[in-house]
Amino acid sequence: MNLYLDAVALRELGQDRLAIEKLNEVIKADPKFVLAYSELGKTSRKLGDHERALAAFKQAVKLDAWSFEYQFNLAQSYEDMKKLPQATDAYARAVELDPNSFDALAKAADCSVKAGQYARAQAFCQQAGEGRSQKLLPVLAKAYEGQKDYVRAIGVYERMLTPQSPDPNVLVSLGLACVKAERYEQGRDALISATQIRPQDGHAYRHLGYCFIKLGDLDQAMQAYQKAIELDGNDWEAYRGLGVACTLKADQTGDDRWRQQGVRHWRRSLDINPDQPKRQALEKLIRDNVR
Image (cartoon, rainbow, N blue to C red; front, side, top):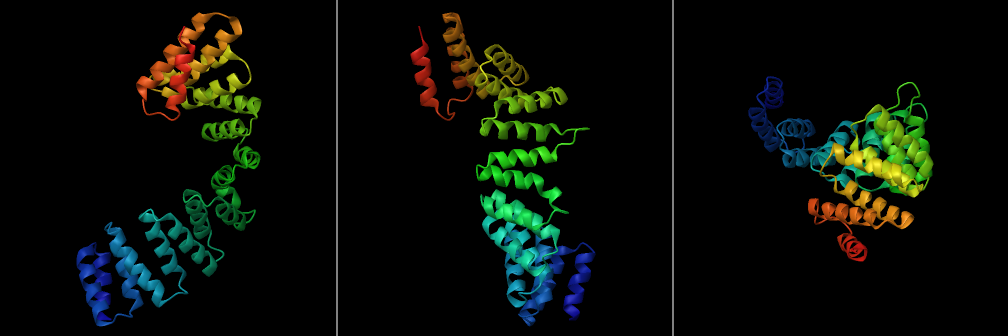
């Protein structure tokens, strides 16, 4: 016990490496001393030695499977090491041990989304209850989007908006969810609002351009894409979208000068990102539209 108390004192004094040496001595003398494993895990985690921390917390949980603290620390170590499915399972076990722990629920939901376990994330969010679920709305929205339930995701984003001071990040997320749900008018309105609050958001302008294309307003689409390019001259997706708008304008007006512009924009997109998705399809479009 004296060795353990010495180790704790060293850790509190910031002498973490010496503390680890003492803790290893404690564990060698008593391999079932669970407090030593817990302290070893916390000290190792503080030093960024995640492998040692994980091993220590695993042993602590093995020795005391009913400790919420040890289980939560184990989950954090898994998360530190980007082992998200294991982190989710460990946080879920922590929730079982203390169903009232909002931190464990929130972490379980967040790790579930990051691990692609969207239905599980939704369940954790809903388990939080109405009184606490407001803080988990961003995670719940991602969980719905991950399940391609864009209508429910839209509803969550709408709940997150406050009329007095709407968050432009939420407006952009709402706009994208509307696009995925093919609610282009609503998406357009959300993205316009986002650009009014944050006029330097090229990402929002690019998606706004797509909304305008789907709504048949090619002039507005081109303006939005051009604004995105003005804000970021290397936005290859904006150049690609602008090329689409120009070629559609050529079809609409019969003026092949628009088509030539579209091809130039597509080529510029490929220059910026030659490894972009669907490159072969774009190269075919260029060949088909060269006059």
